Every structure is written in structure tokens, then in C-alpha cells.
Amino acid sequence: MTGPLVGITVLQPASGTIVLPGQSMTCSGRATGHGGLQTTLVDRVVLNLDRGSDIEANLSPVVPRPAVPAVNWAASVAAPGQPGPHDLTITAFPDDGGAPASVTIGFTVQEPTISLTGVWECDDGGLYYLRQSPDRSVIWAGLHDSGFHKGLDFTNVFHGWLTADGRALAGDWVDVPRGATANSGTLAVGILDDADGFRLVRVDDETTGGFGGRVWRPTGSLLEAQDIADLAGRVQRYDVSLGHNNPPCRDFTVMWGGVWQPTGPTLPPIPDSYCSFVGWKPAPIGWLPWSWDGDGDFSFNFTPLWGTDFPNGTDRNDFWSNGWVTEQPSEFSEKPVDLIGSQFQQFQLFHCEAAMYGRENSGPEDCEAAPRNLLPGWNERSGWSVLINGRPVEGRLTVVNPDDEENRFLSFAVGPDEQTVELHANTFARVTGVVADDAGHDGNPPEFHPVYAIDMLQDFTMPRAQPVTLSGVWHGSDNGTYYLRQIGHELWWLGLSRDQGRSFANVFHGTIGPAGGLDGQWTDLPMGADGAFSGGTLLLGGDQADLQLLTTLISTGQTGGFGASTWTKIYDSPGVPASPWPPASEPSA
Image (tube, rainbow, N blue to C red; front, side, top):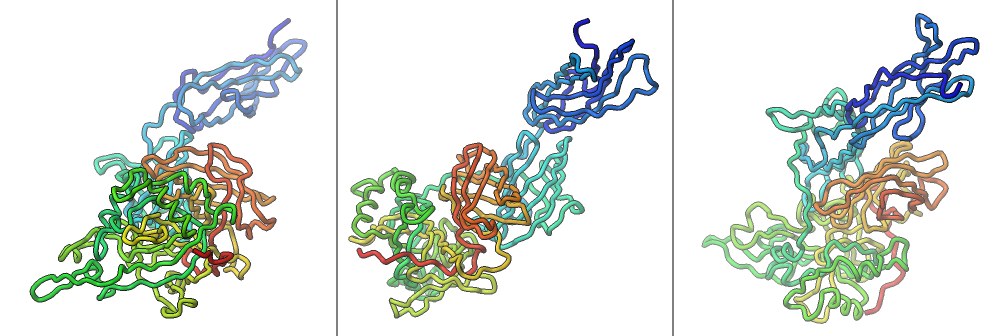
């Protein structure tokens, strides 16, 4: 006799069944052997989905015992995340090693009826950038809408799963150190679509850790590209617009280097008055012009450290080849990149200036109106302020030894309990801002004007706050900033591109293995209108055997085209004094 001596029948699922992505399918049926003088029994039933890995079924006796030997089989199979047709093959194997019997059932995974991908506004004042994957997982980053620099009050990341019916979402959430909070827990939300609109609503008794938001609605917008020429042309100074005096040449520039000659601002006649800053004062007869000699900027000179000087330093080729303003201002006799290049060739440094304000309010009365902020200023509030080690300055600037050029430094009370972060000469720092021409003065070096943020590299040889973990703020070789949070053996991060997440915003969630390596999944989120939208796996190693002491992470394997390959830790916690490393030497102009 040829052919199988066993048979297989399927009770469920029926051929043509339609299921949701990720839905658990109950599979069951009966497998029969062969009676007679040489009895053949079925001792194994295996299910195979789309020629993937085998799934062993559970076998149980048929009661009452039939004349022909038979077993019941049962298994649970998760439907694929990919919508469309799929095949489930069930195979019965006889105990005598003879030919098996198989049957294939076709079923269809339907497209999700709803998608949560997009930008959601929450009643906690946050913007939540959600991405729903075909496998019904949902990743988000939630950033408080604090202004130019989002997420300063809180920034959290989330990884969860939709229920099979698509009516609820549950998972884990973690604050990362871009914001001022450090909580974590579980979160469950119901997904509602009724007369009150499409929304997510927190399920209180399934949420832990003190999560603040309760209701989300998909009413947010993606970040568009920033037109720096337009913005700088509208930001007011005491005399002319910022863009007129300092035409922008390269926005969102991130550069490592050494700080020299930090200098405090010349303040307006009434130091905390914006009207005084833009040249107006009230009088009994109305507003009067009030000129003053200054611009309110604090400044310092800055010598670049290129990638050849420092691991993860500024990529010289990338800096001079990408990101430059392409439309040549009328006052320029050459392309912006060529103008800045010739200036840098002469001076070998950049002069950095942090503006006091970044508003377009101008003229009498308008200067008293609600701020219309466009760019960061060191005397602005929250996310509209210049950042020092990740925290807003908000006017908390003191010039120490102002008349002693050799020993002068700037002190910023931005840390916890008003701890100060100090900007000294010889500081090793990362500056983010706009490379600009100093059109208001001839024969000057190129500028960073305005400065958006300054991060000082921590000296990790000095004593560190305990416990030491991977948590902190890191610089990626893609010029992104990565906010890492380690909880036990789990690692979470939010990575933002140098343009505040417009080019990419990704979330990573992984585990620390016994040997110290990191293994996890990364997902791009819809933050920028033209941002990256990929995902995959990442394997990471480090520069030390003790994982807790790592200050460099290295990609040892990845899928999905992740941009960065190395990460350098900048500091353990935002706003904390960083014991900055000095650069090698001050250049001569």
C-alpha cells in the first residue's frame, strides 16, 4: 500500500475565515490512524503558518474510543500582522515513521478598521506622536508642548498593544530625561468613536505611575520644515530685525568645540522689560523711542572639534556639504556656504551669541502684548528659552568676575534646587543653533546667532551621582540627541534629529542581556512632515565591561536602516553641573 495511512480533518478555522491582525485563532480537529493487524497511531500534529516555524498541537484521546484509532488536536495561532491572504498547513505524523497527511486552510487578515498613527493632543498639554504597526503594536512619544523646545515639562515613551477587537490599548510607559519628570508605569486606554468624537480615554484602574493625561484627540499637526530666513527676518532687535543684522546661513547646526572668552550681555535700560529691549518707554504723553547701546546677547568664542579630533565630533564633510541655506540673500556677494567658509578660513572659530529675546512683537503697545515667540531667547520662558544642559535659562544668568577677562564665566541657575551650571573658558561643549553672517559688522568671524542650546560634556572620571546607569543624554553620530532611561534590565530611549525631530524621531525599547549587550526594537514616529518612517532591530555594545559605566555605545547589528552607529554620553542628568572637560588649547586668529 502506498500513500499516508493517517488522515487529518480541521474543525476550525474554516477555510476563508477573516481575522484581525494579531488575533488569536483557535485551531482544532481530528487526526486518524489505521486499524487492523498493524495499527498505526498519530503521535504528532504540527501547524505551520506561511511556511514559518512549526507549532506543536496538543493531542487528546477521542471519547468514546472509536473503532479506528484517532486523536483530537488543538492549538492557538496568532494571526500575522500583515493584512491579506495567508495559509495554515496542518500535518499529522504517524508513529511508525510512515508518510504524513496534510491539509491547508486559507484565511484572510483584514486591514485594521482604524489607525492610531498620527499626532494627538492630550489634556495634559502634550503632543503625542503615535505609530500603529500591522502587528497591532503601538509606539508613541509624548512631549509637553512647551514651545520651540518641546518636552521640557515631561517627555514620555510608550509601547503597547491593541486588543483583538481594536477597542482598547494597553502597555508600558516611561519618562525619559528630556523632561523634568522621571516616572514610569502601565497605561490602559479605551478607544472611543461616538458623538463626542474619536478619542482615547485613560482607564484609571489599569494605569499606574501617576500618568497625567486622560483624554487624547487626533487633532495635532506634523512639524513642517523651519524657514529660518523668514523667522529671523521677523525677530525684533533694538535696531533692526535679527535676520537683517545676522542673515542665517545654516539652521539647526550641531557642533562640538571649545569655549573661549564667555561674555555677559549688555542689558536694556530696564533689564526685564521687553519694551525697553526693542527701544520704547512709556511716558505721560504716550510711548517714546528709547535707544540704547547693546543687544542683550551673551556670547563666547567657539573653536570646532572635528570628528578627527574627538570621537563623535563634528563631521567636517557633513558640515560643509549639507544643510546650508540655498537662496542667496541679496546682501551676499557669494553663496552662504562660501561666505562662511572664507570667514572661517581666516579666523578658525565661530563667535556664538544667544539672543535675549526671540519675538516678533515690535513698536509701542505691541511690545506689551502677549509674546509672539519665533526663536529661543535666554530671557524667554519654558521651551522658548535657550537651553543649558537641557534646561531653560529663563533669565537665570549671572556674570561672575565681569571685569576680569581671564577669570570671567557665566553661571546659570538651571539645575535642581537652583544648582548652577557654569560656562567657563576652556569648556568642552556642544552648541546647537544657526550659523549666520555678522552683516552688521565688517571683518568679524562667522557666528552662531542665535544659539538654541549649549550642552557641556561631563567629566566621567569625577564622582557621579549614584546609582550610575545608562540613563542620561547622549549624542548620536547622526547628530541626533538621544534621551535614555534605564529601568532594571530594560532600556528605553527617544531619539530626535538635530532639527527638533523633523527629520527623524525614534523610540527604542530593549533589554540588557547577561553578557552586557543590548538587544531591542526601534521605531520611527510621525513627528516631521518629511521625517523618516522605518523601524527594525538594534544590537548595541559598549566601550567598557561594566555596562553601567558605559559612555559610548556602538551598533553591532541593525535592520531597517538606522542612521547612527555610535552614541556618546553627554551627561547623566539634565540641568546638573557637568564638571566640563577642557579642550586642548585656544586657537590664535
